[in-house]
Length: 82
Image 1 (tube, rainbow, N blue to C red):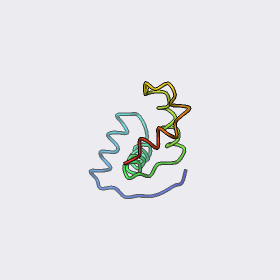
Image 2: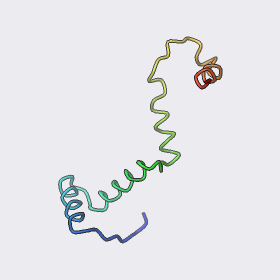
Image 3: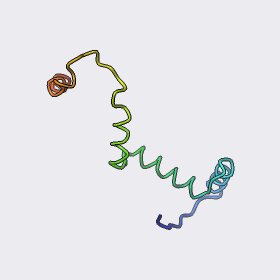
């Protein structure tokens, strides 16, 4: 971890402290979580996280087609054809 120093308003600091106390974690953990959410909302996602998310959905959906794995290039081209 890298140590940083930030200033919060009194209201922000109080809200962070309340949430940290409620969840029995540190103020720093709350701030790290908030920064992660902010970054993800703006499209800043680590490649490892993106790959992990993609791999979790593999096999989740059924196309109903028996030859999809064999003809996936054709199917993909068909899907993106205007």
